[in-house]
Image (cartoon, rainbow, N blue to C red; front, side, top):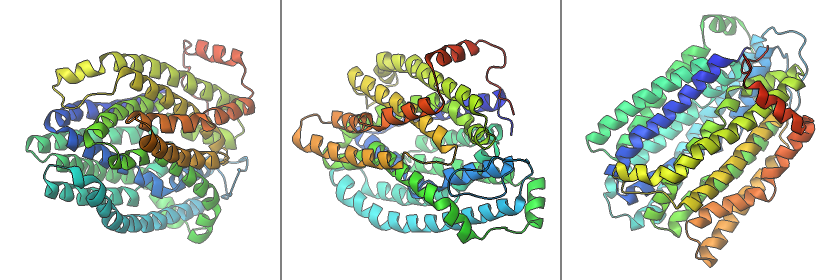
Length: 468
């Protein structure tokens, strides 16, 4: 597996396209949507993380094991890995893993759709639409279609895992750019026609259909199809799931913790705050999340490389990539965060937005907490690349603590929207945000001089391209 400059550039291009999607679509929605409707869309967006939540860590485990198989391993392990001696692909083992993926996600998608129709509809009726003055029928239609879109995303969720695990970063990002482009065109056209919320949902659906179809064809190329057709599964679906379940469930608790501290708070907020307040927080968080996404793009490009370095015992290469990822993440937060605080509302005024950002102090707090989370996420993945998940307990505890702090702040203080920022930020800083970066630094034996050396390397030729 060779991941280098082209993969990185395409990943940045795909991330830029996601941002461009927001830059193009968001101004239109801000002009057309009242604050109440923007608040509704913020709630819709919070529910998109349900797919990651119900995946419960399996996609990450599948992706990592795909990398292990293409790196030459001959058996799956519950934890740890065996250093490989040969790089030949065991297609029988690969077929077993793919069969397990298909079975798991088919069941999960079906369960989700039932829960969304029943529980989700009750939530929408009782806690959201009670104070909404717009057309309820249109919201319900968009809601049901949105549930179908999310179910389809869950059913095909493993497509990202198999491509990432195989190291097909460049091609995967090209597909993302194409699908996002089509999504933008469809969404804008339907917004102009007056479909409002429904336009955003239909745009998601069309983009997903294109992306998933092309991803499937990319992974199952002629050679892979031929080898998988002639191969027989070497392990039963039950045994595959039994082997990867322990670490997957630990990752699932980690994802649940992330959901509680980043998305559940938005779902809880309508009980205490107005849709207009939620809209203001939602648009601010969308932009902070975009900066976060850009800050970890460099690292996410090389995620399969970290797994390969682990099974090949290349510790110095791991240290080098890790330090670059942290430095790049900090630089992006500074370069993009400062103009965001200074000129964000000015831009919204120019596009005649009906919703504005939170105050500069609030935005600064959101950016600081977001960077700390990016730092600990990168650090945690260094441990995860070795098929170890020691951080799951602390993440679920931080998620529960976030919800508890949010409830206390909303009920017994006058902090209002600031409660949404402080609850997650404080809960993370208590333990998670310092613990796992410290563990990684100690494990990789990182010294201050290592940071200086890596920063100097940015100016050297081929500093991004990795060795095999």
